[in-house]
Length: 143
Ligand SMILES: CC(C)(COP(=O)(O)OP(=O)(O)OC[C@H]1O[C@@H](n2cnc3c(N)ncnc32)[C@H](O)[C@@H]1OP(=O)(O)O)[C@@H](O)C(=O)NCCC(=O)NCCS
Image 1 (cartoon, helix red, strand yellow):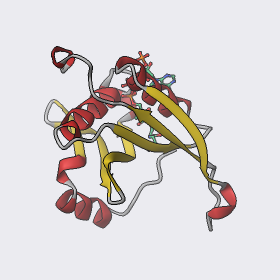
Image 2 (spheres, helix red, strand yellow; image 1 turned 135 degrees about the vertical axis):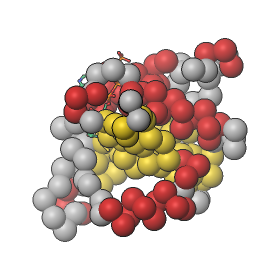
Image 3 (cartoon, rainbow, N blue to C red; image 1 turned 90 degrees about the vertical axis):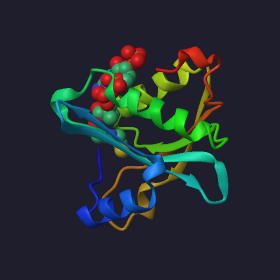
Image 4 (cartoon, protein in one colour; image 1 turned 30 degrees about the vertical axis):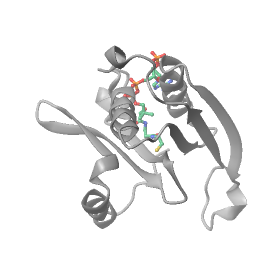
């Protein structure tokens, strides 16, 4: 499901990519995060690397709300495409991104990106999902 990175990698991430990082807090505790970046070769595309919500907070809209926050933030920089990769064995993640696309009237497409034999370790395939256009049609829809 989630390939945890080192704590050093997350600290470095927050230092260098704060504009495309989101955390969710409940009662002053961090319960979720999104890390992403604007692709250097395609700066109108935000690539979502990881999304995670604490198990006991899942199913409450926190994952989708963090993605909404990220998309509304990068929209101010002209980014209107979201890319992410998802393994076929992660129905929760597929459902969450599909829901985000549906609520923004955006098209969602999928194609193979990384096959298992590319990974030096045991790893499921990663399919590339693309959602566009991600801009909300009405500003009053922002939450
Ligand atoms: C994937 C994950 C981030 C979803 O977070 P969440 O806060 O539970 O998701 P939300 O409550 O915002 O749900 C958003 C939509 O996805 C659906 N959904 C979420 N998890 C689901 C699941 N396991 N099965 C089916 N649908 C699911 C919700 O029903 C909702 O759909 P709706 O808008 O049509 O009602 C969370 O399950 C998680 O942290 N998983 C482990 C880490 C992981 O696999 N991350 C992705 C790879 S980096």
